[in-house]
Image 1: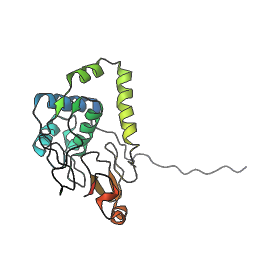
Image 2 (image 1 turned 180 degrees about the vertical axis):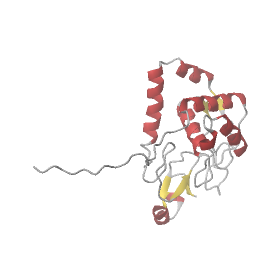
Image 3 (image 1 turned 90 degrees about the horizontal axis):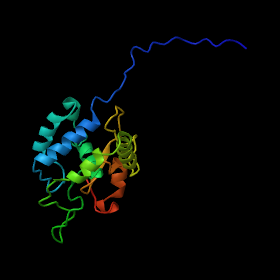
Image 4 (image 1 turned 120 degrees about the horizontal axis):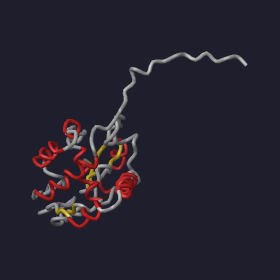
Amino acid sequence: MNPVNLQEIRATDLDVFANPADLRQDLQALADYVRTHEIKRGYRDNRIPQAHQQRLIKLMSDPASAAKRDQFGEARWIEHLDAVCLSLKWISYDTEGKYMGYSSSEPSFPDNFMQFDERQHRNFLQLPLQAQEERILEIHLKAGEVGACEFFFAQHAGTAGFFPLVRLRHGGSPNDCLLEGEAASAGTAGAVPGGRLV
C-alpha cells in the first residue's frame, strides 16, 4: 500500500467562536430588573419597550453583543432572556392578548405588566446546580422543536448566516418565521392561526 501524502495546513487563521455572554448572570439580571421596575409591555407587539431594553443592555455580562439587533430591529439577546425567564416561570405576563373588536386582525395587549414570581425564582435557586443546568438545557431543546431551524434562523450564540425570513407575529415566539417564498405562497396570515405576516 502506498503511503498517502498529507498536506500540512495552518490552523492559526481559523476563527474560534465563544459566546461572550454569561447566560445565567444575564437571566438573573433580567429577573432582578423585572422585580425592581414596573414594565408595561408593548400594546401591539407585546415586547419589552425600547427604553427598558436599553437599560437592560447595560446590565448584561457583554453589553456590546447584547446591543446587536436582528433584521427586525430587535435586541435578540434580551428577547431570548425574556423567553427563557418566562419558561422558567420567574416572570409572567399575558402572552395571548385579546381582540379589541370585530375588526381586529390580531390581538392587543392592554395593560400588560410584567410580574416577578419570587417563589418560582427561589425554588429554582434551591435546586442542585446540575438540576438547574438541566432545566435550562431542556428549555433550549424544547424551543428548537417548535419549527426553529438553524439553516433558516440565526441562533443567539452562533455566527452562521440565515436565509431571508418573514416574521409571523402573534404575541409570542421570535422563532415563528417563514421563508419569504413560503410567506408569499401562504398569501395571508390565515395560514397560521392567530398570526400575521410582517
